[in-house]
Length: 63
Image 1 (cartoon, rainbow, N blue to C red):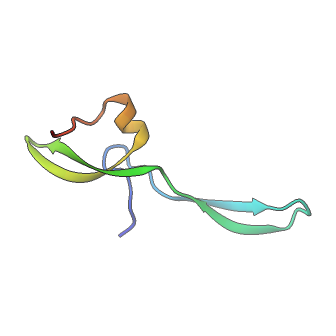
Image 2: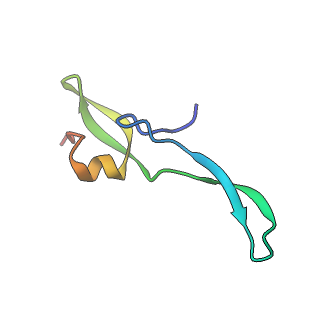
């Protein structure tokens, strides 16, 4: 199973790496994910969350 943000659904995206001579090859961009302990349905649970969701306050951290 591929890792993705469990809040917004952000996952790995694919594209082309283009060199100076303009030859192309495949590459990928991974989201900045953190495994955090958060409150899910009233109980603490470990989930993968992107840093954008953490920073914007979409996740209630468990202490």
